[in-house]
Length: 278
Image 1 (cartoon, one colour):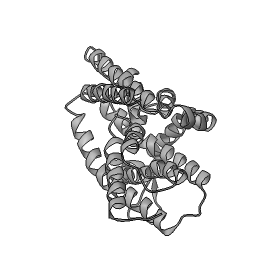
Image 2: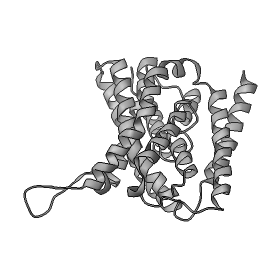
Image 3: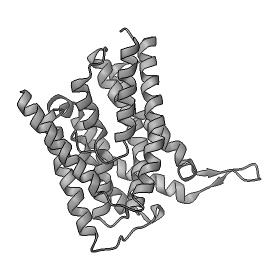
Image 4: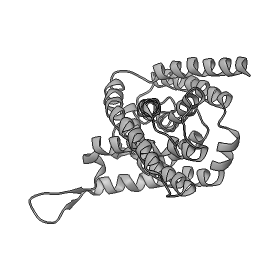
């Protein structure tokens, strides 16, 4: 594998796309697969398959750093022993509960999904379907107030229900954050609490998926492959910081309908383009 200037630019572009789309409800996997249709990376298929997932660790690191005070369950005061934040531990247990449905489905059907459903038509259809869902749900939400407005108010039942919705994201083009946010909005969680819980949920999910891909690929990385992963994750990390700040500010004043319309337009373009090209 040769890493020249053009290949570095390609990897940087993939990192930018990952950093933008991982946290916005527009499907990072869908965008990465679509970009892969037009930009050819000079790497083996096995490494590329792993790269497109493991690059997400950069985005996850961004969320961990930005929400460290909320995610880290210990607080250090003047005394030598740390103070245990019971509410944070409780929240992480709820995240584990929410991860169970997705973990089971991924282990059972991940190979089948990769072999049969990672196609432009499936991606385009999912983009449109959930784009329409966002618009309908947000119109419905105008007539009601959220039941759960704070992250700490999410109980185990709500967490498990959100986890069931996350299962939908196994279909390329759905969006993991989009599926969990749609589920949370449907059951009465506010936009801010839904987004924050999605950030928490992303940490074990993305680490788990990355571990699975690395185990499948093996640990025999060349120096060039390690450099590619490092560049991709570093770019995804930097862009994610900016995108997360934007999203948290945006949803305090706006709803998700704009993302719904974006998904519909992009999905229509994808289906039309690849139908004509085929």
